[in-house]
Image (cartoon, rainbow, N blue to C red; front, side, top):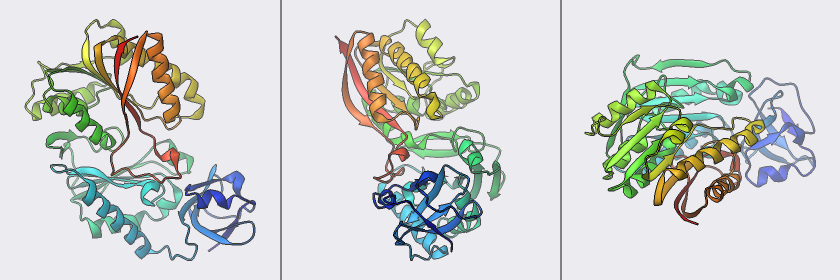
Length: 392
């Protein structure tokens, strides 16, 4: 196994628990294939970690373990996967059969996402190191959970930056043409595991959907960027009087209608509207008790932050204008480059410009099946705020 030496003091990053080392931290850069496993040494020659190495990436090292003597063989990965499975058995709520099984660095698998939808496992690989272990990882999933089907959706910008071609295929099991039926907190949803966003469903919002359902009893709710109706179904299951769902995607809205009807709610009573959310909010005069904002990532790169901040502020101002006095707002950002502090400042600025006071009731994030490392703030991509607007 090749060795890579760090510049003086850079080993501190590893000890603090951050799983990445950027190219500027490296004193030596050996010639090696992307994804090669290497021993990481401090400037003084002390072995401090095992890592995946990518000679052409800004993220040059992805730390696997701080035990440089570990044998990162199949047994090593089996033990990690068993730990991840055990965590989900502990933290998943009843009447739920869809959850994240592996959350990349948070579970010690840099670049691997694996979501389980009932008996269907959907995985995504975004790093060269994990691509080298693809066969091992799939074999362990077959051994430890025995899924009915394994689907791979390895696509996107992160994968292309690693020099990897996109892959979207059925790995094992029957080819599925219909959506997969799942259960979450007692509600049922159809999930498009082949063409839907992410791996088909926003599993990271499960706890927040449950909270919204508990709050929505008797309320008129507006669900913006509603996708396939997850928050809408949860609010209606919790006793909401009426829910309006707005999304630009006609395909997502068609599945949202099916999900409403699947749970016994009439779509003609709870409209699903195909529209640009910004335009809809500006044109609407309807007032709501509860507005939910769960937009796609506005900032996909660091260069997008300023523009994204303006977009987030605008959407919050328009949403606050649609709230009745004392109304609730649950708002989210899944942009990695918009941190929690900046997101809070954006919401505060929107409230100021609309002449409202915004009471923070709770800061929100993903469920326990999306663990992150304490030293890896970049892994905490989903930020949310539940608040209440009152007159200034």
